[in-house]
Figure 1: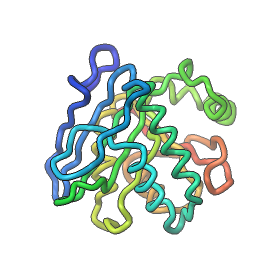
Figure 2: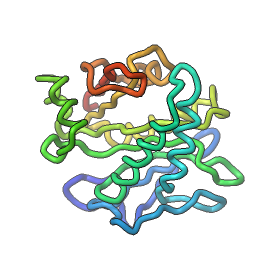
Figure 3: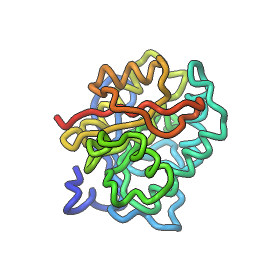
Length: 220
């Protein structure tokens, strides 16, 4: 695990597989200072592991998952979130857990995020988040932000999303972690609650046009 003060996982990234029923969960740390402007990602396929997937796969999988009820998100949000992923990988260190279906190796689930320090978040969304949360925003300092979680719709009811998220939390749980989601009753929200996330407050507008619900999981 990256200690945030020393070194990231050696090499481009190295993955650790977690034994479980179904596809193994890979744990992939990006480089400490990002992969730079030339990064393109390695397409998923047979025999591919230990590398972050390209932007296009994030957009396709998240878009398919978020198009389903109760989210029913417009595809433009998947494109926007995929752009954020691409920028995050190029410019800083991300942590991703993911699974790839067998035998074709296609991306079937992922969770990704990054370490959060307020002094490093110099963009309008973060400013609005801090303003809306008020004093509660101090809870997020030096934690990990979960940016996106998605799993292939056909893999519903197999626990794939839960295993993927559990592996991500397992890497960062000692720091605490948080996320923003639609403030509605959804399978994702219920999963977050079962895994120890609680309501912290409301943040910027979510894809459903309402203030997003910020959920926080304290260090364990």
